[in-house]
Image (cartoon, helix red, strand yellow):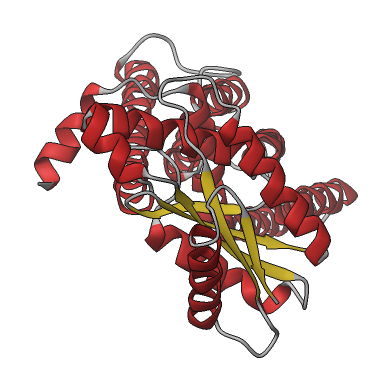
Length: 355
C-alpha cells in the first residue's frame, strides 16, 4: 500500500501552491534548528575573532562589536519571523555578515594558511545551508555570496601549482556536493510532505464529494467546542427521498446528486464546519450567531439546494440543535438527529429546531 501511494505521488507534478505550503511547513518545523545554527555560528566566529585578535596583539576592536550587533539584530528578527520568505532574506543577510566577518578574521592570520581557512569557512557555510529550510533561489544566493566573499583565489595566491590546483578543485567539489545534497534532500522532504498530504486527504476527505468526512468533522468540531461560547449549533442534513433517486435513476445519478448537494453546502457554509457524515446525511456546525441567524442560514441552504439546476432536482430536510455549554458533541448529534426526524415526518423540505 505504501509503495502504491509513493509511486502515485512521484508520478504527480507538485503544484506551486503545495510547494509553497511545504516550504512554509519546513521553515516552521526547523525554525528552532535555524536559530541554533545562527547562535553556534556567532559563538564560533566570536571565539576565533578573540583568538586571532589577541594573538596578533590587535585587541578587540569596535568593528567586532559592530558585527556582533548586526548578528544579534538578524538573529532576533529571525526568531520573530513567521514566514519562510522573510527567513530567506534574513538567512542571506546572516551569511553575508558571517562571510564578511570571517574574511576580516582570516586577514589577521599568517598569509600561508589564509586560503585554507577561507575554504574551511566557505565549506562550513555551505554544509549548514544544505540542512536549512531554503528554496532553490535562497540556497543558490547563499552559494553565490559565500564564494564571492570567501573566494580563496582572491588576494595573494601561489602561481599555478599543486596548491593552486587544490584551491580550485576543492571549492568546485564542495559546491557540487552541496548542490547535490540540497537538491536530493529537498526533493525527498517535498515528496514525503506530498505523500503525507495525500494520506491525510484520504483519511479526512470524503472521496466522492471531496468535502470533509465524519472523522474530520468530529475532530475539528471537538477541537472548537471549548472556545465557541454559548452560541453554537449543530445541524443534520438529509436529502429527501434519496433512495427513490437511486432506485429510479441509478447509483451514478445518485452520486452526481450527492456531489451537487455537497458543493452547494460547501459554497453556502464556507464560514462554518461541514462534512458528509455518511450516505445522504451531512453535518453542519455553526458558531458565533444567534438561533435566528442559524435558522436563516438553514433556510438559505434549503432554498439553494431546491433551486439547483440539474435532473433530478432534490430537496433537503434539516434538524438544527443548540449545543449547550455543558453539553457534549454526542448529545448534540442526538438532538440534531431527533430534530431531523421531526422535519422529515412533518412534510420534508423544512427546518426543525431543537433548543
